[in-house]
Amino acid sequence: MHTSNFRPLKRVQDVVKIFSEVYKKVPSKLLLIGDGPERSDTERLVREMELTEKVIFMGKQDALVELLSIADLFIMPSQSESFGLSALEAMSCGVPVISSSIGGLPELNVHGESGYIAEIGDVERMAKYAIDLLSNEKKYQLFAKHARERAEEFSEDRIVPKYEAYYEKIINEK
Image 1 (cartoon, rainbow, N blue to C red):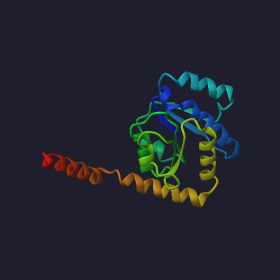
Image 2 (spheres, one colour):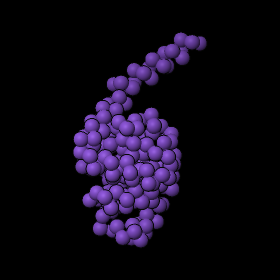
Image 3 (cartoon, rainbow, N blue to C red):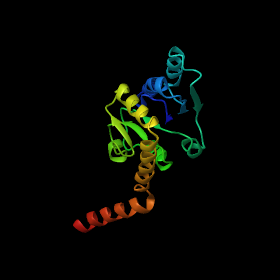
Image 4 (spheres, rainbow, N blue to C red):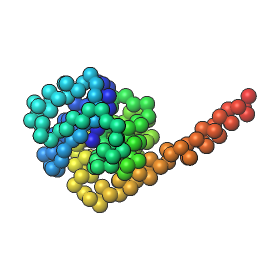
């Protein structure tokens, strides 16, 4: 699964290329959720790669939690992310993440525990990681568990006290 606003920096076409490699080894489908300027180019790529029966464009959705709950992997190959809220949402549903190594994603997605991280544009490595997880049930279950646990570290009851303590520290330094 991938969710985004289909802008160039989200690299949705990389998601399709990653899926194409995964599908060669693991029977699967790709759900693309969202809409934006790159959607028509992505649809064209899907047709060119003859994946129209395997890639489902769902458009904008309100029931994201329900959709994430049926996903096996979340693919986020972005070239720019400040934090990766979409990845956090997936992880909170116990979905391991394959992401790029930019912005806040490496802080959120722990390589080799809650998912895998690769360099921007490294479609081959991301596909390899996805195939590895989808082909090894025991490893997959462990990553899914760790994804959920990692997401819980960013819950409101854990994060807000950290912000409050930081602000108190700053105020008291003046």
